[in-house]
Length: 253
Length: 365
Ligand SMILES: Cc1ncc(C[n+]2csc(CCOP(=O)(O)OP(=O)(O)O)c2C)c(N)n1
Ligand code: SF4
Image (cartoon, rainbow over all chains, first blue to last red; front, side, top):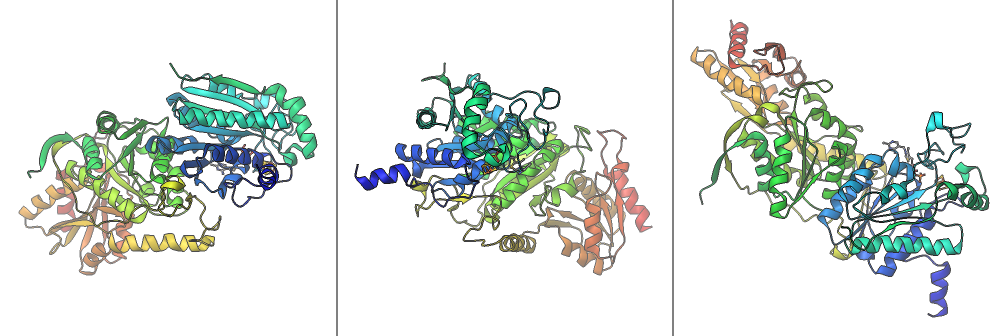
């Protein structure tokens, strides 16, 4: 690798990334986006990919990426991806969704796709709240976490308990792969990127549904600095949402 | 070649119509009185190598339609009134994304869960777009098993022509009845290839990525640099539809002093009533709107100018009657015979020719 190539790989922008859609300083959604672009490029599938974009900040990085794309109504990305993948089985089809998009308003479509064992991939950015609308309670908000609709912190009486999406997805027989990653260290960046690659490979090999959840920092709504966010993920979020692979099948029987 | 003829149910004719219209995929959720449609596609589509998916809900069906249309295929769903309600967010998104699709809506009685039998109580919500945002869909209204087939095939053509949903609005009675059906093929005008569809960049002729989204102009794109330019474009599309896609049947209208206006199953009762009235020497005709949107305003206006009065026969508490009033521009009196005229006060009651004839006699005496 030449020096310029190395530089491009380390600090440059993946060729698929396109015009950067603005997000807050310290937001990790664009990092998830970057990782997805890197994997798609490495697989050489940029020209064979269709992304279905959820509604929320998580969608931004996909808007102007150099891959075919469609914006879904809030929560409905799995329905759109279902039809796209069934009608274009040779395309790499994935959804990018937030935790609110995927398991609050979109819980029905998500469970529907899992139940049918659809063969697309979902990348879910879990920032434990609704970023776009100002940081409200999400199904993933951790106990005691202050959000704009849980001003005294999430309590079980008012808000129940957090949902564990990657674990849930793994329980479905049609799921080939389910994992949860984070972006707090270089090592976890690399592991999470590998999760995404494995998920896409499950789709390419037509094994079954594949899912990766990534814990993603949201500094303004967490009321923390970007660095404090990383500490909070390590100390609090990861205790509620353990990292790792929950399912990895070569074949569904 | 002899056209194939068979005896089928109206709901099944929808399936045959979809085949004649070149449909690639069906997405649907069961609901009475359209279950035979879902069953037909489940039976007939996979074995023809086409896609059938039973969705998890009607919101699922409509968004699957969005996905299938986005990747360039001809797609259809069917539902009945409560399911239609659930589809409205998705339908509005499909309109904004400018995707073609066909929705068959087999009306049942409402409001709420209502009845599982025929009714015409969804005219207003179906002909006014249905969802948020102010838009229009072409609405075709069959009145026979044959038309269930023909209009579904036509709907695919019109949807592609305008990159807009087309609704086929039928009812439980036409859906459930059995008549003879001739499978026809149609020579619609050729349409351009769907160069806008998502295929993956490599499959695009120009190798340029496609981005379909539901906020054109808000997210500026070459075609629509701002919000107003997109809304203007939609409006021009609706004007064009209203100008050239109006369809209706005129039955003994020429010399009629009284013009009945009816669509769907009551239009059959009305035809019979017209014949009986003519036998008595009464000058009665029928205008049967085939497109409920765009509505045949001009045909009604012309009769109003010529001095006719109108009787709207509609199995509801009065919905289409408002369009007839608007079209007549207060020139001819517009009378109404609605669901109180059913032969039974139940969900199974129907508006029969006899009561229409009685009303004709009363109005012309
Ligand atoms: C039907 C509908 N309801 C509500 C909204 C408003 N809304 C936009 S984004 C959003 C929440 C997004 O949260 P999440 O999916 O977690 O994504 P994030 O912004 O955190 O990335 C909401 C409620 C909407 N766009 N559509
Ligand atoms: S509000 Fe949160 S999720 Fe949205 S862009 Fe800002 S940091 Fe990211």
